Length: 411
Ligand SMILES: *Cc1c(COP(=O)(O)O)cnc(C)c1O
Image (cartoon, rainbow, N blue to C red):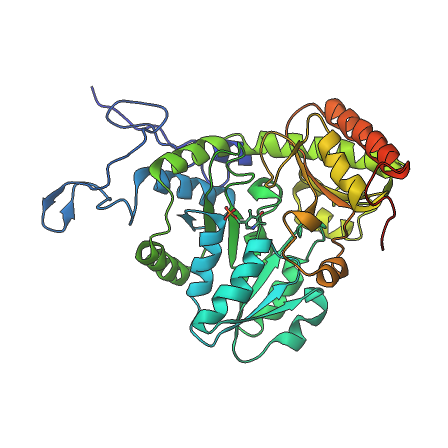
């Protein structure tokens, strides 16, 4: 009997869900196992010197589970290549280290805190200088110098959920041969595919939506260029900041339901966003899925079906004290850093994720002391909405009747 291999279910023209479930998920040819085994071996036998049995030699250079995961991410980001790293931060570090000494980078101001830290405190050690701008679409051309090699965008931004028009920035950058990187962590490949809008590299903290279950720290970069593949895979191997086989396997498993989770998180964040907007206890809501969002037109152009994703932030009445109380009074939202998991989380950026940024700098980009950031998980929308409303009611009441330490909104 001859065994014929059926055609793969996941071609580039398949829908997102089909690619999420099938890309990089070949059945095991020797056992028929539908789910690939976790390949813990660090080394792979060779039949003659320099002739490995298969495509693997040593697990830092490449590993079957990592390769499966990379193939899946490439399929989801409409990319030719993807490379996985031990964290989102390691991904950023490797891309920055691929630049020659003396290179200049232009970045949006409100990047992820760890990215800001790398740009300002680590990159300069190998001679890379970073300029930050709050309005990159407006003034990118003014910041470009002959040394500019890279533009770094985060859209939506964290934690104010501002959007950047990727196509507009890529057009300006490409006139000067400058590469554009988009950190797509906040939306996931289901909602936004930056390469389709002209970006050269898309990066993710896999820790967030791609894995989606708050049990893996990992990162990934995806791109089309062969030259980038050579340079970045060389560094991936040389630096060795690679994920374990187990983490690659777990993240691959998590990503198979990414489309379901991203849709549900969007439904939930939309319900919560509308409830917040209607509340007298709320000063402002930042959510790109709402028509009130200043960049709603970009969301409609850049996001799948104009979806807003699962992240939102809002300013509560009653200042910092009310923001802190809110996060202690929620019953379903857990007070914790991070985002993108199946469980809902809340936090106060000014004293948690963004505490390291000086107050004036923070407030200039909208990170006020009374700002609360929510990551909506995949619980039921009605429960999340009610949770937010009861916590709002109690937090504002407590902090306005003198129980709070700082009832006055200090801006
Ligand atoms: C978490 C995060 C990172 C860093 O990723 P780690 O996996 O924690 O190293 C980078 N960018 C964004 C937008 C993030 O949310």
